[in-house]
Image (cartoon, rainbow, N blue to C red; front, side):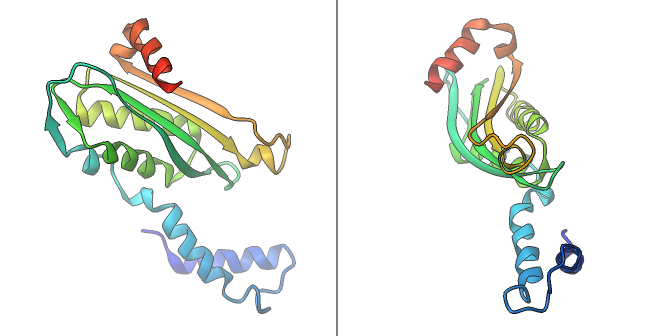
Length: 184
């Protein structure tokens, strides 16, 4: 569980460190607001993908299931700055399917942690593979990183794309091609 008091203390120190007066009107409540913010945006630390992905239904469906354009927001562990974008999660069922909102929930669980995009992509794919036991899984994330937009190279609009491929999607180029066609 996140330590609300430690977060507030850290924010007070941060304000002091950058030369601000933490007692001035506009900043007085900032430590509390930031603590509540972090409880919300880092809630995935306390959650496991097993919960949403364990609610499956029998289905005799042999095609690809794709939930695309899932908006996500995460915090980069390197600079503690946001990165955000869209996730596309596909799987080839093996006799059972999961409610579509459960794929969205899985993305949220991994996004709401200190992250790097590469790890997050693999975590989502591994969770779907483990808990649904499908024939294959393919996950693609496209994200803009504010550490590249606001600082450093300052290149707004550039996107990082990561891909995780498991099972039959790895073995069958036609399935991979179908995934990319479905994204269009």
